[in-house]
Each structure stands twice: as C-alpha cells, then as structure tokens.
Image 1 (spheres, helix red, strand yellow):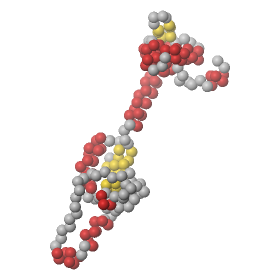
Image 2 (cartoon, rainbow, N blue to C red; image 1 turned 135 degrees about the horizontal axis):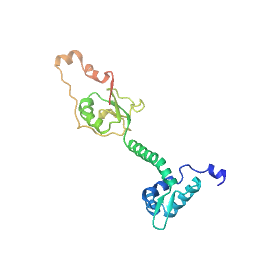
Image 3 (tube, helix red, strand yellow; image 1 turned 90 degrees about the vertical axis):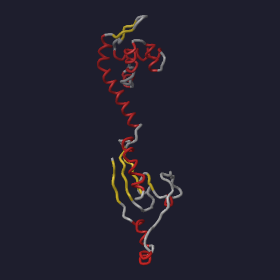
Image 4 (tube, rainbow, N blue to C red; image 1 turned 135 degrees about the vertical axis):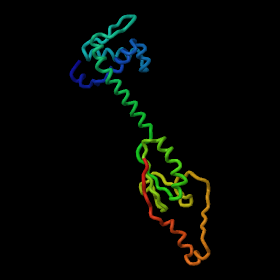
Length: 203
C-alpha cells in the first residue's frame, strides 16, 4: 500500500465488521447483524488484515475462529467498543428527554389554581427541566422579554399568540360596602393590575 493510500485510511475501517464476526463466529450472521452483504463483510475484513499485516481469523469451509493476532486485537478493542456503544445510547436517551430551563410569566391568579397543583407531577415527569417563574400581572410582549410561555387571563392574550385553555371560564366580582365605593371610587379596584412582579424558580 502506498503512503498516500495509508493516509486516507480511516483508523476504524473494518473494526465493526471484525467485532461482528468475532461475536457471531460467522460472516453470514455478521452480515445480517450489520445489514450488509456477506461479500461486503469479507472485503472489509480483508482490507483490515492487509492494513495490520496479519490474519485475524482461521477460515475453513465449516467454521471461522480467531487467530492469536485476532484474539489480541479483540481483547484490546472490545471494551472500548462497548464503552462507545454505551455512551452513544446514553447520549441518545438524554437527547430524547427535555432538559434546560423553562421560563414562564404567570398571572398571580394562576399560581394557586394552575401552577401549584401540577408542579410536583411536572418535576417528577421531567426531572432535567428547571422551571423559572415570574409572577406578574403586567401584560407586555413576554416573548420579546425572553419568556418561553405565559399563563395569562384570556382577554389579555394578543391575537397572534397560540393559546390553549387551562381552566374553565370565570367572571370577576368585586365586593365592597357602598360607603367604600362612595369615598374611594373604582380606581382602587384596579390596583392589582399594577402590582409589582415577583420571581422565583423551581427545580
């Protein structure tokens, strides 16, 4: 093999085929496992043996077995191959599970009626998600402010927002004595709309 050909050779070429044959003791079964043809398996093995300069298997018409060089190679790379396979599986599992921080802005009224009842179950179902909640009765562009979602009273939701109903309809009711309203008017009733925001987070 020429030097430039060796430079283009991938270090891992043929190793998956070698491991499959060693595991199954059969080129045909290894081909089934890797979903390729037996010819492709044999060709990959021959290239690996030429690259290493040593035969890795004894071949007869009835069976195939590891040579001394093959046993040495298997002992060295099998643990590494198992570690790679396990690591890939764990990475895939984590990539399929939601993680990170969910930033919410929530009406004060929604905190006891919507958030608190479901928060324990949410933490149990998605342990890798941290919930960061800002409690506020202000109604600005919360997406522009960096929030992922908001829980707001329906009448305050902008038309272009995608909304999902979380509770049955309800009506506001304000109670007070006639004397109170006579002296204070209706302005004081609106004070809750201007309440300062507060912030907390749950893990």
